Length: 527
Image (cartoon, rainbow, N blue to C red; front, side):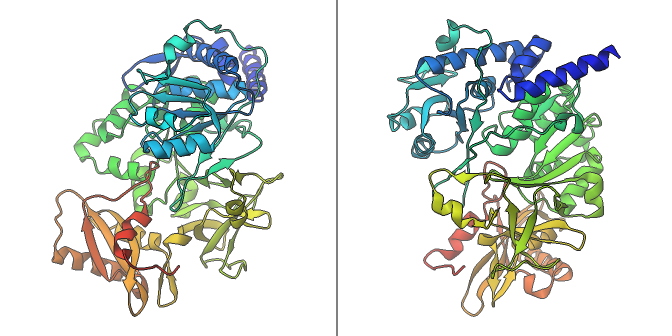
């Protein structure tokens, strides 16, 4: 009975702390010496240490004149300072924008300026950090992480003499992620009201005092930030960072750190599954409780293999930086509806519209529209035209294409910009890829539309082969025959091009536009 009362008291404290960004402070009081962040090199920071750093950062920024609502940009890899800056902005009322540190100096500078950042925390190993900052005259504070950058304060030295006690007037901060659009400059997705995790979400996902979270993807990306970093802070469990993908290292880390929760994307599934059977057999992953995945469509064969290996612990979501209705599907439910990303949510609706704006019947693909929450949800920062172009009434689209089945389950078929139009017929390349990847020789596939003088476009499969297979005319014909046996004739690729690599976004999603681009050089694609 006493334990139940303690848990209820803690839940109440955490619920209150969510409203002013002080969740990490509560965990620092409850479990000060428990590891909060474990860096790729093994360096650890406790909850007490992370909380103290967050308080110091707030005072540093306030001392430089920053106020609630001001922007803070963060260019940082997976390391404890990322979490400390994030925790500070949560309680200081600041609006944080994590920036992809693989970008060029000009690209980083564009985001830092566009988000109207008044402070920049940047990692010294990112060579573009200094040149980017030189293009941003409005920065009041520049802090270098993990080394020296000319004109920047040193992170540790800047915080060393500042009061580490909990700030007395916390204000809930916000975050603004930038979309990785296929055309033009990225745009900030701005929500005037900060998002707060729903009550009981961590309990629903099986977090307890023994939970350990792994972040194997880039923390600056929306999904790892939400499902790894913010989840670990909210649930009060250690966050284990990896800096780059290494399939066996991931398995080794899961076992040695007793990881229970992690976020992955389909390409990570494929790379894990590609490990030799004897390597996979060395690692017992039966303690893993919850794997959440999304960001890119997952071929059903790949997901089924992961469920057979890890058990029914996979949970798939469908949403974007802009939000969405919040589709989610468990392993058990997915096995009954293979390929689906979940059932139409009851709270906020979604619908499929055809090119004329009419609602499509079950089984017919169209553009997916999501209902905006009360108050309007989000805007593209400083781009009202893009905001309005994405909307129909109180619904918005991220450009995805899919259909509902008779039972209200959503199936994704691609994006509007990816749709192949051959002889006036729409062909959704993800459907083709989902079949091609079932062939024993195919490691991954990116089907695209290429120019065709008669039909406008023809279907072309661009394929990566598994180790042990070599490109040949015979293998091409074998794959095409496989496609003919599993796809309607009009969806079967006319030709296969073999490649050694496929371009991917930082989220692991194949960048189909980059695969397609060489075929259209010098020609205009009519879509």
